[in-house]
Image 1 (cartoon, rainbow, N blue to C red):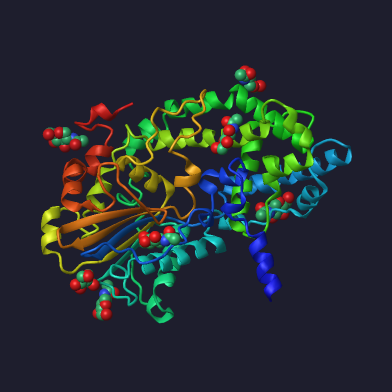
Image 2 (cartoon, rainbow, N blue to C red; image 1 turned 180 degrees about the vertical axis):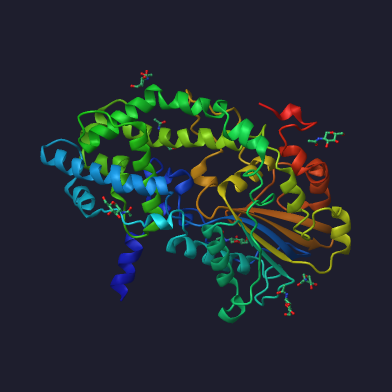
Amino acid sequence: MYITILFTILCSLNEATFKSNDVHNHLGSRTPYRFRFNKNDTKIKYPNCKDAKIWMLVRHGTRLPSDTDVIGMNTTLKDLKFEILLYHQLGQGELSEKQLSSFEEWSPNVDIEHNKFLTTEGEEELLLLAQRMQKRFPGAIKHKYSNNSFLFKYTATQRAQESARHFANGLFTKKDTQDVVFAPAAKIEPVIRFYKHCDKWQKQIKKNPNTYREQKLFAVSKEMNKTMESVSKRLGFNSVLGLDTVNLMYKVCGFETSWYKHHESPWCYAFDSNDAQVNHAFIKTQHYDPITLVINNTVTDHDLVVVLLNNFKHEKPCEYMKKIDFTKVSKIISETSFTEVVETNKDGPNATFLFAHSGTILKILSHIGLYKPEFPLKGDTLVKNRPWKSSFIDCFAANLAFVLFKCKDGEHVLALHQEHIIKLPMCEKELCSLKYLMKHFHDSIYDCDYSDMCSLESNKSTKDEL
Ligand SMILES: *[C@@H]1O[C@H](CO)[C@@H](O)[C@H](O)[C@H]1NC(C)=O
Ligand SMILES: *[C@@H]1O[C@H](CO)[C@@H](O)[C@H](O)[C@H]1NC(C)=O
Ligand SMILES: *[C@@H]1O[C@H](CO)[C@@H](O)[C@H](O)[C@H]1NC(C)=O
Ligand SMILES: *[C@@H]1O[C@H](CO)[C@@H](O)[C@H](O)[C@H]1NC(C)=O
Ligand SMILES: *[C@@H]1O[C@H](CO)[C@@H](O)[C@H](O)[C@H]1NC(C)=O
Ligand SMILES: *[C@@H]1O[C@H](CO)[C@@H](O)[C@H](O)[C@H]1NC(C)=O
Ligand SMILES: *[C@@H]1O[C@H](CO)[C@@H](O)[C@H](O)[C@H]1NC(C)=O
C-alpha cells in the first residue's frame, strides 16, 4: 500500500520536477491543469468584507484530439514509430533503450467518434477545481444547491457540457447534483462563444492571411530549420521531417502528457532535453543547445497565432463584458444598468459558472489588458520573457474568476486567474472598487451592440479594422 503511494508520488509528472527548458513546461494550450492549479485552498478573507458572489469562466478540461489529429496519430505517427525503431536498429538516432521500448509499447487508441471529448483527467480537473473554489469562497459558493442561487451554462459541445457536470459534482452531494439545472446551450452563442458566429471577426481576423504572417515567417526561420533538423536527427532520420509532422509529434506529446499522470509520452522524447543530455552528453559541447531552441521556438510559433487571433487591438468583446458584469458578478442581466443591479439585487444567482473555450478566455484576458506583451510578437525575434505564454495562460481548464466582496466601505471585486489572486492592470490593489471598474469598463458595458459590432456592413468602429 505505502509502496504504491510512494511510487505514485515519485512517478507523477508534476511541474515541480521539470527544468525550465523541459518540453513539459512548454506544451502550450495542451498543458494539463495539474501543472498550474493553486494548491492553497485556504478561505480568502479580507477584514470587514464578506465574499458574496462569484462569476467564473472556465475552459473545458483536458480533451481528446480533433478528428484530423486522431487520424494523424493512426497513420503518420504509427508509421513514424516503426521507422524510428528501424533506424535505431541500424545504429542511427539518439534515443536510449528505455525510450525505444516506450515507443515499442506505444499505439494510438483514440476512437475518432470521440474526437475532442473530455477525458478522465479533464473530469478530475474540473471536480477538484470546484472543490478548491468552494473552500476559498464559502460565502459565495454554498454547499447546498438551489436553482436560484447558482447558474451553470456551457457551450453546445460535449467537452464543455461534461466539464460543467463534473464541476457541479465537485460542489454538491450526489443527490443535489441530480437537481442541478444547466442553462440551455444555444447553437449560436453570442456570449460565451461570441466570436464564433461574429462575421466580422471571422472575415477580418480568423480568415485573414495577415493574421498568420508572423507565424509563417517563423516557420521558415533559421531557428525553426535547425529545430527540425535536430528533431529528425535525434529520431534517426536521414532527411529532415516536415513542419506538420514535427508539429503533430509536439501536439501528441502535449495530449498524452495531459491524459496520463504516471506515464511519459514517447513523442516528448523528440524534444526532451533532459534525457538527451543524460544519454548524449556530447551534445552539450556545441555552443548552443538545439534542443532548447526546439522547445522555445515551437511554443513561440503557437503563441504568435494565439496572440493575433485574440489580438489586443482587433478584439472588442464588449458584449461579453456587458454580460460579465463585473456586473454579472452581481446578476445575470443583459440590458439593465449595472448600478441598479448592485443596489437592488437581492435575488438572482450568487454563483455563475460558465464553461467555454480557450478562445473565450483569451479574448477576455486580452480585453482586460492582462499579460499584454510589451511589443508585438514577431516571427523573427524570440521574446523569451513575454508575459503572454499559452503554456501558462491557456492550459486545459484555464479559468478566470471575479468575486464580489461586500465590505464596510462598499463593494469590491477580487480577480483570480488559474486560482491565483491577480491585480487587475487598471486597479491599484487586488481588491478593487466595483464602482471604479464599472467606470473603467463603461464603454465595454454600455456602448456595445453585438450585431453592429459583428456586422460586416457596420456603420461604426471602422477604426478597429485591420
Ligand atoms: C529557452 O527557454 C529557457 C527557459 O525559458 C531559457 O532558459 C533558455 O535560455 C531559452 N533558450 C533559448 C536558446 O532561447
Ligand atoms: C494560502 O492562502 C491564504 C489566503 O490567500 C494566505 O493567507 C496564506 O498565506 C497562503 N498560504 C501559503 C502557504 O501560501
Ligand atoms: C486506425 O487505422 C486502422 C487501419 O489502419 C483501422 O482499422 C482503425 O480503426 C483505425 N483506428 C482509429 C482509432 O482510427
Ligand atoms: C427551482 O426549484 C423550485 C423548488 O426547489 C422548483 O419549484 C422550480 O421548478 C425550479 N425551477 C427550475 C427552472 O427548475
Ligand atoms: C445571495 O447571497 C446573499 C448574501 O450572501 C443572500 O442574502 C441571498 O439570499 C443569496 N441569494 C440567493 C439567491 O441565494
Ligand atoms: C529554412 O528551410 C526552408 C525550407 O527548406 C527554406 O525555404 C528557408 O530559406 C530556410 N530558412 C533559412 C533562414 O535558412
Ligand atoms: C446603420 O445606421 C442606420 C441609420 O442609423 C441604421 O438604420 C442601420 O441599421 C445601421 N446598420 C447597421 C448594420 O447597424
